[in-house]
Image (tube, rainbow, N blue to C red; front, side):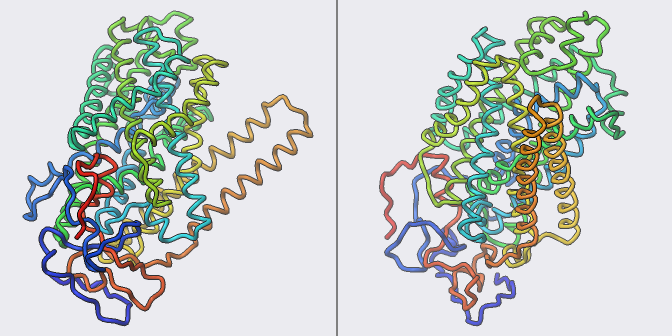
Length: 564
């Protein structure tokens, strides 16, 4: 089938060699440093002895099982220790009143993650690679730094959450637990030797463990169904405190590194490169994301419901009531232990441990894709993990030694604020790329979807901006520094906020200048050097699934590749 996407180039394109039409279809241009002696029309990698998940050419509902995996890895970010922290505080302080925030945020997350998956499936390139191709070097470098900072900020709650879990289970001091987390994830990364599918099943198992743990907790606490349903479907915010918690809940649900991660993970599947094949892939990835995020939604609802039911219990003594006013991950174990018994406390610790470990694995992958996409630089997973984990351990260890568990809990909130601050720098490029016909062709977002996603994104960015500004003002008002110092701090602080808003505005108003067509076989626009200088072209073509993406997850069984 020949797909006409209205190429603006003034020359007629060549057709891909028929020898590669079936098993080695040629797709979009490559920006990697690989070379091949087979000529400009040869695939990037002709044959790689790695485990690949191949989707059958024939469309069928059974193909859905081939797409299972990426959505579960992505959903981990929605049930990480940072989410647990805000969920506990929401339930303890406002019972079930803020459950509707979780519902709204989950719906928004589903739409945004679906766009990330669509970008990867349609173009054959993930979000970081599109940013490198689209933006100037300085802008690209800044976006890379912000993305790396987001990965580190996401890893801090995982470190602290795992340390809290070890403290609950084995009474290990928090600072010792922080050090232990530096090696724990490396053990799980060794599972890559057994294949990407098995690792995805492990992540799904850890998610199931968390779901079972909190469902058991929910059975113990027995919240009133009518009150839970009212909290889910009747929006209400009572007071500034509720607004602050709501902002934290919403900001923690959509993380910037997840957008890079999801758009890259979908490239590990060998998707049929036809109109029907791409449509089926996008549809099944949407189903998978919806299923995984639904589980994450139920877990978050369970955490809030458990916290709300326990803290509103009439059996609490005054000391426990005081703890409910400022409930965090470490206090949660004490509270659950006294109210629901030792077994319930252990279940919470196991769920927290599973959350921290699985979130770290996905964070490591996100860091690899970010580095490869922005800089065209790849390093081995364990080195990447150690770099990210070291940057996360240093502040966590310092805070744990000085401030103890209370200080470590506050560091989780700070990390969540950093993620909220950085979200626009991943979300805006994603929305602009998926709304651009020069990049998505016939798969561009419908105007209704574009309007809906921009409204959602604008609300998220507005809430996050309000959160940052209001938080800074409160910090100045409650600080004990002199008035002159407050004035200088205010000048520098608000100048930084102005630069932040200007950077967001730049990304919004800047027009896309690079043309990247969808990766379809027999596409007249594919891989050709067009007269338009803004059209991406290269002498090397990608063959999907992206072996460079797969090899980040799986070690290649051959040390050299025969590309002849």
